[in-house]
Length: 281
Image (cartoon, rainbow, N blue to C red; front, side):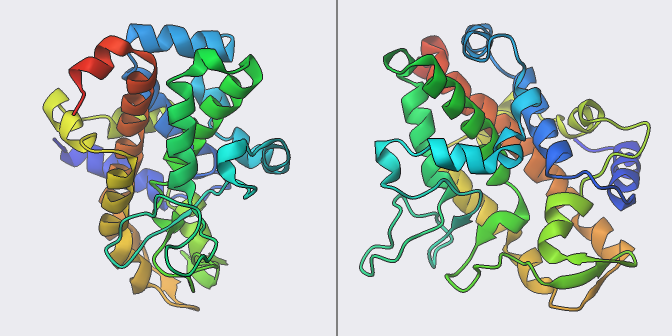
């Protein structure tokens, strides 16, 4: 499933310094992988809603126009809470399926909740105006990408800064959150998001089915389980070495890949009745 050549290429990709990352490059990669695995029926529905604009082109829209998205969202199910790009998990690493912590009523940061409700709406897209369908498809594309980033998991309420403390990455001062959002995914020539997608998209249909098993909350737990160790390894002021990057290359590759497969699966379930019947629990 992985060759020495692919590993060398991806390591070269990840150790370069660039301003782009899991902001644009990572989101575009996830969207490209997803686009490659949409059924024809889903592709048609996506093209209708997006008026021909590919998912890759809108994958970072929620970052580029965050204030606008917050101002024009929420719908009723958001309960007046602006949408989030990260998610908090309970003691078992499972995301909450609510916006308020059971028992305490504390407001939760819950990317997974918003993505889940957008998907529920998209499954009944004919009941909504074009502007809502467009916005929810944009949000699903972005939020499922975001939830797979190791820096976007909050393991406790005191993780409000989600790693926004200073570190040094290959001699450059940055923050640990930015390491995952940007520095760990870069695009030196001749790479592009489509090149990265081709490198990461290497699973068999059976492997893809296993990755997409369960629901979006199961996926969130999988992300939290896989990424927990890397979140406690680096402390404020640490210098991140080339060896650390090499040791975590496979994690980043896995998260980009899984995000793409799961986004495709979620959209196929929402838009393609035949696919949904085949993959029903």
